[in-house]
Length: 437
Image (cartoon, rainbow, N blue to C red; front, side, top):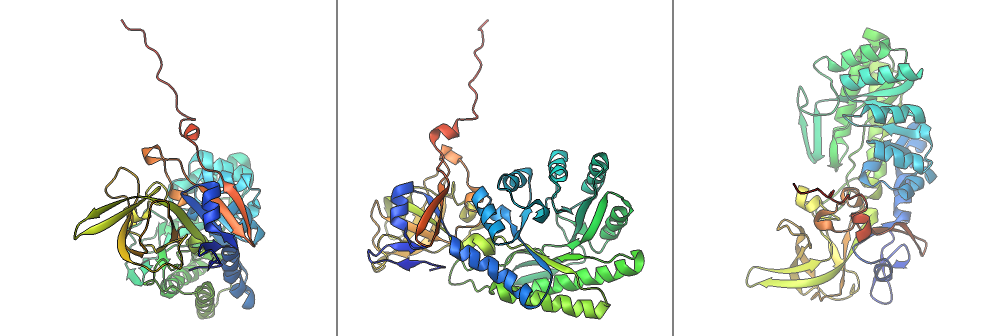
């Protein structure tokens, strides 16, 4: 179990001092429950190591993992910055009154309207991804007579996923300026030539669900080699080095990620080594945790319904959600652990497959899950659904999206209400009547 989870005297799963079964009965299922204390602890852990080393830094929550007004306000309370990747995420941040100077705007195809929104809001930084955006942003800033701070996103030729690292001469990616073929150099020259762009530094992102710091160390070496050449060629010194996010979490017993402090400490040490090696000023370090802040703080509660037995093959147990509230198993074969939240003390008796209710054979949440003999009306709690669950939720089969509840210190707060059937058709327009000829 994770964070503040406990088993209460009724044998129920308890999160943040609140009975998860009572929450399910109050708000319905499927239901996303977030452990606020765990989110706060993670945010403080990332910041603590920078403070310990006396290093200037920004820890920016990558809000694509889970973006709502409430979570953005929680990150503001914890003094984090915010990474947005669309006009919608920026609009959410502005609606939440997040400090605009701490908003960073990512994305490989920002529209004119999105960039104008960012300029008019005077956000803290735009991470420029390509030459088209560089030119468009220059034009818009000139028209607004405004100078925008930017980072240049580069592909350092390092791809990381869990324990695997691939180094290539030229990264095959839709993101960023290539570090090795001259694109990044050309981008810097163009940006420095603009009177309406202020280049703060450099950015990279090497992957997701990374379990150790090796990739970040390799990426830092590549970035500082480039920064050294930029100093010599263009008299440019970076104020900011952003090493991105991708810090992993534990979904199952097979996952073994580092603690936030360990990632940060190794990043700081590598930056120190490269600063000394190239005799560069020590930059402000930015990182972008998303999943590692909210992933294992989220739990989804389902109500169990039908069963199906395929003799000598498999027992299927169906829940009242599925790929409409957690599409990751269908997209990525993501693995999860789960329990019967209303029967936490019962012993496991069978191995079952947890099926969703969508009309797709691929709508399977967990293939092999040990459980007590599950009955209709039992509650299944699936752990670590806080990242990319609600964010990627959808209305396939016209299923309404679930509610979201925050729990902390024995209190529960509804932060996203459950969609209704009326919500599903709110934007629909009827077919216009046609006169038959």
